[in-house]
Image (cartoon, rainbow, N blue to C red):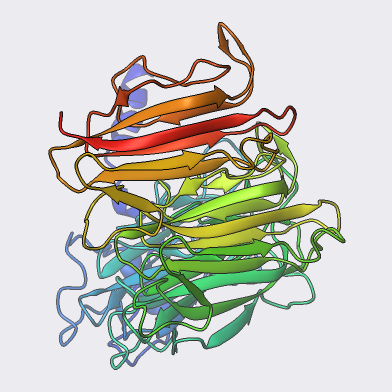
Length: 550
């Protein structure tokens, strides 16, 4: 009895490994896409591809390789689809891009493979050379717009169960590894846009709901290499109501901020940082959602040339101020259709843009912005504002900026009253090209300056800034005040105060009746600034700036 058991165990151990899983080869040069007959399938089961290299030569393809030109695609299904497959219905496909610079993208519109376990414990579909962290798929989570890292891929379907699952229908498409390479040599799926032109695109079935497997991609390119693509959606419902995008998503490539969108907060005035973008709708949820209608627009990069200005740009001379408000302000709240962009540019390339808001209520805020937002581009610090905390003298790090109000709500919030101003990035840079707010002083020369309404009290809007510069680059500026009453003081300044830049540490701010007396700067220039609160008014000051040789 023991010897018979030993013989049986040995027989099991030497069973050939090639009997596990069925493999179908496809006799397909580039033009041929017909699946192999059942006899070839049975033969292929005994002769699984053993070579590790695939897609070596488009002119001499292997019998099981399907070669695809850029933009073309091949549909492939599990056996008997849409009926259930069986335990011997495993298959293998090899897809290759004719252009060695292209890649293969796999998308499944219907997918039910294997059981609902924590991992793919029975049937599965695997994709080689995938750029996704997960290249093995099962249950109803099929591949959606999965792109390979090489020109070819081997897609392997392993079926170990009996007639239980429906299977899948998928497509393999050859796509460009890098989009928008040439306006002349375009991929068939690329949409190229001239400056100022737009293209509308919608989710599948819109305005009816899209379904699981309705993943889709769009590629938009600007004909002018200096232009950028702006994406904006006026209706958007993608994915479920969770705290994050946990099922369906819309993603936008080449953006300088978060490019993933879901729920009811779709992209509004989202700009790319390159001439092109890939927009992807990934649908994995079993529930259908209404989807979206969006536009892609080619727009000029802001503030490129003061002589060749875009129509939506406002160019400002040094010290020039341009007010702007939300729609209806202050008579009415802004509405859910009042998303808008302003572009401000400094004529002088040495200038930057300063944005200041005197009144501000945009969206709700609780640690972060809950809905509507106000954003300012090209900032070194926080660029997103919401709630009642708006920008106060925020200066850009470039000559231009894009200010955007993004609205997701209805007529709830008051809005804002703001201004954009062209200011010199650094004070006292060039005596031959002075900023309009700079006062240049020869050695020993003085300039008097006073607070607003002096010697009467100044008011709540009396905050002001002065800039004094020494013509001689080795001179300094001395500040002295003969009369001074600014704000209250009890150990520290209680409300209003005066500051002097480029002084030794510990000097200032000045408030109460503690006035600056012969305060000498450490550099050739200084900014003297009066900061005023909206509550109590004071007499103010009478001061003098003098260029001194120290």
